[in-house]
Amino acid sequence: MSTSNKNQTMIDFEIPESLLFILNQNQNEFKANVKLFIALEFFRIGKLSFEKAIELSGIDSELFKKELFERNIPLINYPAEDLEKELIALI
Image 1 (tube, rainbow, N blue to C red):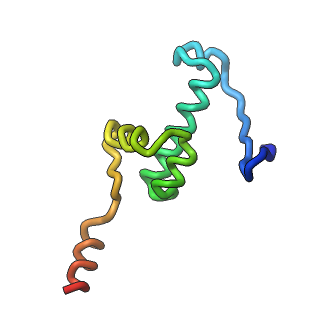
Image 2 (cartoon, rainbow, N blue to C red):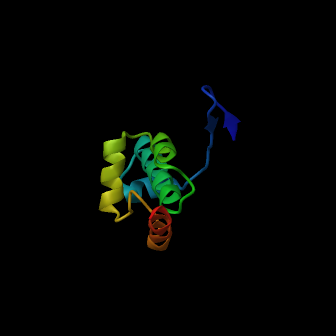
């Protein structure tokens, strides 16, 4: 890992060149997809907020919502039992 500007960290890793060929992607496309997939997964498991996931993905919020929808990842991941408890507490 090396430090970059704007309080960001650069993370480098190697992949087989054949992987880019198999995926029919260049390095920039692969990098963008990896960032998106990581952001989506961290959001799905609750490790990143919506805003931070968007920041990591590098895409705008509307496109990120579209990606969530296409992968059946809920935008609001709130367990029903927690919602029910909070609603009861409000009554």
